[in-house]
Length: 304
Image 1 (cartoon, rainbow, N blue to C red):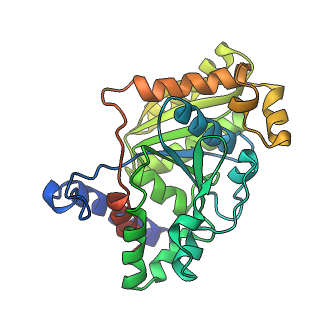
Image 2: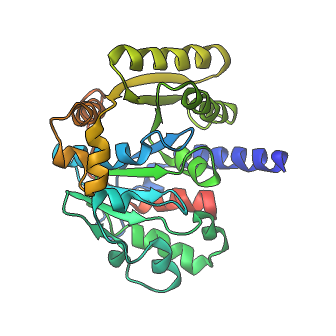
């Protein structure tokens, strides 16, 4: 079984590499407009274990990027444990598989929240795509291509390593790994990095230390993780920063109003805003408006 899984992962990586080598004229032209279709910047948010605040960071980071002028879509891919809608105070009527299996209009599964971000619930197992007919798979690409206005896609993965999180690790442009200073959280974060390194899914991972007592606590946690990774793994870590342990995080959850909306001046709120600023401006290229058609093709290469 482990050998089969390893072979599957290597196939996925090889498919992605082959796609990246394809000629641009074969893949980046929008049939509807005839103009170049750019991918959204995909942030895949991971954690080694539950309870480290991954979903809260994904949601509030999305809002912070929206507040800085980006059109953001959050995909809640935490299968069976989806709760981004709760943090956003949003009602989800349909998920992505309603659009595929029940002919629900794709626009109906997009939840327009009052906080400047849109939301799609991943619903059931994303690997159901394996069993879809060619017509249904074509519909995935066709429907995703409709959503060309988004600049950023944030994928809130389930905790740990699963088939879904592996898939979105591969298609993600940036991997954001969330941990806390607790030894168990750091150990589990290292296990995630080990899988990413072992199967060469990514060469770089950005790390966020949540629930930190102070800057020193966050820095020490990252250094501990980075030191071990640099010694045993073929992967480069970048420290995005710490988010302080803040009682207003729990208050925001209970009030079902995102932290950066209700408590923007809180220590944790400022930490998330600072990380959003780093993601936008501490990079060589700007985030550009994007189309989902190429993303759809990537997804089908993984699931099809």
